[in-house]
Length: 234
Image (cartoon, rainbow, N blue to C red; front, side, top):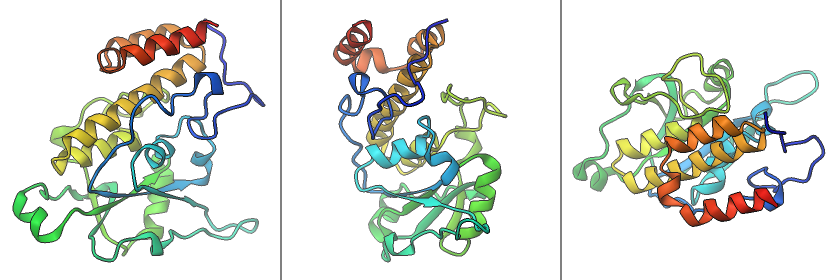
């Protein structure tokens, strides 16, 4: 088994959380979308390099991020900052208990109402339920249609169910549902590079090789991957 390079106290890029010489921040251009994206990150999730909520906030142009803190005797509750919401856009709060994603990708709907804004609850499934209660009433709670569910490619963590997806994968589903296929595919590349690089950083070389074999990264980023692997060999 390879040696993990994500070591306690090791210097990391403040954005991608990898060691600076293996930084992946400039590998892919940012994601352009007409959808306004807000990420509400649980404080326990915020400190994890594997967080895909942080990834979304970093790579999607115009995305905002804030940290959720549950009320305790040591910490005051951190409510979602409603001032970051756009008053002229409908808010969709993404959660598995919501109604099916509205069919909002038609030209008529788009022209009449514009693109929505989405609020993502970046946390474990249990924590997301708690967070949902803190934002109830701010918008419409929606979920991805089951017909589009695919096994998660988030190989950094065990999923209780094959169709449980990461925050970034959920955003891809929303983009596809709204007809923003270019944004969905660009975000997929960011997501898959994030997972692949983190697997290598953990010393999971064989698993990383298998992951790359089923990924579009080799075709989309041959030059960057060659340079990235050369940096790892130094």
